[in-house]
Image 1 (cartoon, rainbow, N blue to C red):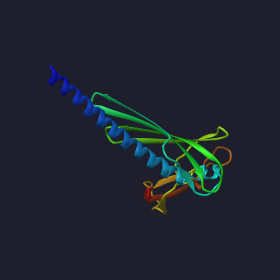
Image 2 (cartoon, rainbow, N blue to C red):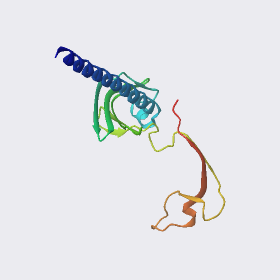
Image 3 (tube, one colour):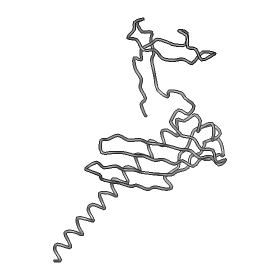
Image 4 (cartoon, rainbow, N blue to C red):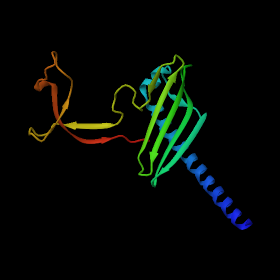
Length: 175
């Protein structure tokens, strides 16, 4: 009976160690993604008073895993503080990273200012693209794409409200 119990205990201990290692990897990945988003986000930078956004270490972390029918789902939550290199404002940053065994990951970063204002930090802050997008005039044919540039006055849409083009390259690379 002692050998069986030792084997079971060793197996459980190995699974716990493996889970802790995976949790630490998820925390580190979520932190790096959130740090890059915060450092690049114009709205967060402005809210903190300008200058470079400085992200502190992880102050809170939690991780949950679930296996259902062979699909593993992980949810990692971390918290940290962001500040400006020139201002005295700070923001509390809450990060949620959801991942599934298929490899897809969704990372949401929310900043909360001292005033209580909250907004999502997306790495661009204010509707910019954040990467390089080249748009060139495409051929005038029915197969070319139309991109809306806004609406016209009384709800009607005229030909002047569309720009024809073709996206050649769109890159959103992290450093």
